[in-house]
Every structure is written in structure tokens, then in C-alpha cells.
Amino acid sequence: MADLSVQTSIRSRSDAPRAAMVAHLMSRASGLANDATLASLLAGWTLGRGCLPADLGLGREGFTQCVGEHFPDLAWRLPERDDPAIEAARERALEMGDLIRLLQDHADLEVAGALDMALIVASGCLGSDHLWQDLGLASRGELGELMRRNFPTLAARNDRDMKWKKFLYRQLCELEGLVICRAPSCEACSEFDDCFGPEQ
Image (cartoon, rainbow, N blue to C red; front, side, top):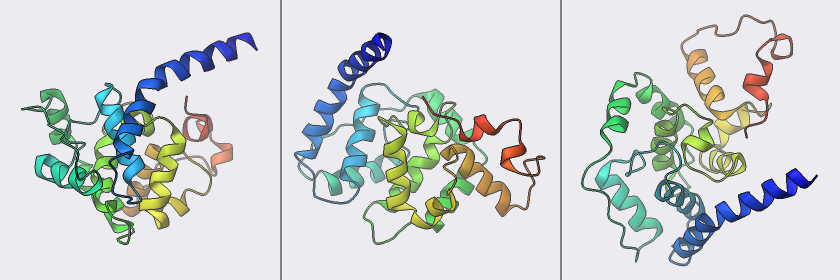
């Protein structure tokens, strides 16, 4: 029990800069549905979390427009150039266009910024950790909210709470008619925990 309280204390201290930055951004927010998510993404990037490029995968112009829409009086300067390794990974990703199309096909166009979130989530899928970590979000719960708000029909398909990155790639395979699992059901699969286990 002592270990758990120590971990909680360490986590709350390490989350303090994120919380302060999110609060700062939210004090300038427009009141749109994705304001808090974007604030968390920006805080994560600033703190060096995740694998997103400085423009969050939106391109410089798209990023400037997105931030201006959600935080109109915020002055946010992008670095002069992106990390070359991130740019190279993005260019090599054969599935990037497919991921963007999948997400945009399910985007709720009534939600401001949903199409931007498709680009951001697709960019996060290129990382090697859990998707919420690659996006620089604070928790898997934040990612779940992002998915349900912006891509409700797609999120509804994840009714077994599969890990989001695995779920998205599975959707791509199913669209192509590919069989990716040899087990007759998820419960009978030896990799069940890889797909459905906790993401810490």
C-alpha cells in the first residue's frame, strides 16, 4: 500500500506542470468541444511527451489555424524546423493516408476540429508506445474521450475496449479483407493481453 501512495505522489508531482499548462491554455479557450483535448496535446508536446511533431501532424498552416480557432489570443510559435527523425518517419509510413481516411470517414463534422484530430491521431499511430502515450496525453481515458467525441461511429465499434492503436490497425486490415488473427476468438488467443490488457 505504501508503494501505491508513493507512486501516486510522484505522479501528481510530475503532472503538476501539465496541469498548470492546461489551465493556462483553457483560460484562453474558445469554448469548443476539443479545447481541453488540444490543450492536453500541446502540454504533452511542450513537456517532451509522445512522438508528435511540433505541428501535431497538421502542417504549419493547419496548426496555426487550429490553435487560432481554439485559443484565439494565444501566441504560439512553432520551431523553425521539425525534428528530421519525426519527419522521416512520417514520410515512410505507408499506412498514414489509410489511417487518415479511416478516421475522417468517421469524423463527426458537427464537432469543430474533428478532421484535425484525425490527422493528429494518425500521426500518433506512428509511434511505438500506446497511442495515448504517443499523442502525449495524460491518460488512456483522455484518448477514449477524444475518440468518442470526434469519431463516434468508429469508437462505438471498439465495444470490447481494445487498445486504440491495435483497434485502428485492425479496422484497416478488415477494410482490406485481411485476416490478422488466427485464433477463433479473442478469448482463445494467446495474445489477448497484448490487445486488451491495461495500458500503463
